[in-house]
Image (cartoon, rainbow, N blue to C red; front, side, top):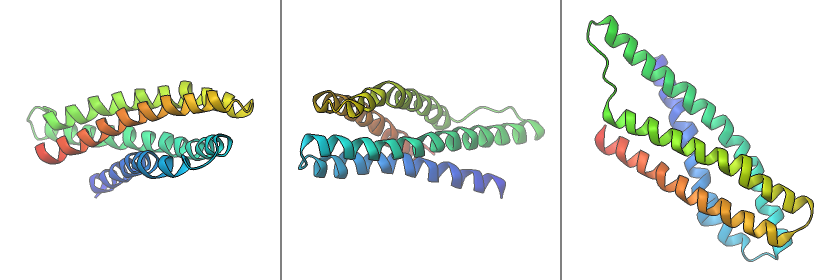
Length: 156
């Protein structure tokens, strides 16, 4: 039962993260392009600020649940007298997930800071440039996230 609960937490956190990226990249951003620069940049700033807070919580949930599930399976394997070899899809998922977390860290703690400064100083040109950098990094993270989902579902 605990494993199923951990897996649920893990998947729901990923849904928030990947789903949020899909929404922002393919739906919110194109609609926001119809706004004038000050409104567009402020809208995206406010939205991303809230979303990035949710992603931080999702990352903690993904890490905690993922490590706990791996540890649980490893412990059960050792207790059963067989060695634990982490499945290839889990290894790929964990490695690419860490890459995604690092990219998110860059987005949140470097690129978003630029957007923050631009909004604070009403520098809409700098805000647009920051949003373009964020969009590129989010697109990379989204591609990695979709690849992880495909790999784990097709290999698992």
